Image (cartoon, rainbow, N blue to C red; front, side, top):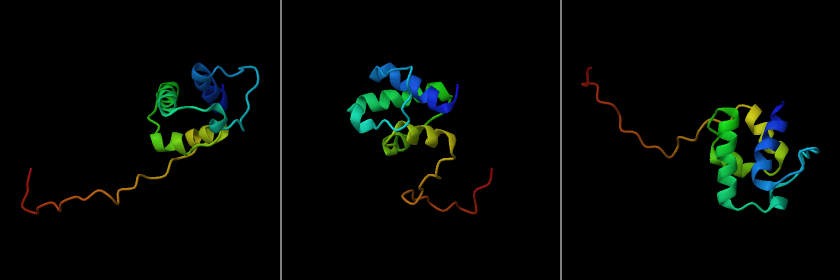
Length: 94
């Protein structure tokens, strides 16, 4: 089963999609998913792909194909610009 089929299978659990026809261009907007269902789909994808998919990746996807692509391509590195770390003291020794 390829990535697109696996994504479709997860979506079908919450959206009752026709499993015999996979439409990679189906937009999430047309499914009218609320945020709770979107997060449930995210948990389902995490389980299906045995990974942790950032919520931002799920919310960024506009179509089934977008979501499938984000699962197969390396994600962008996290933005650490908002994290402020204190410099380590040079006197600390373990």
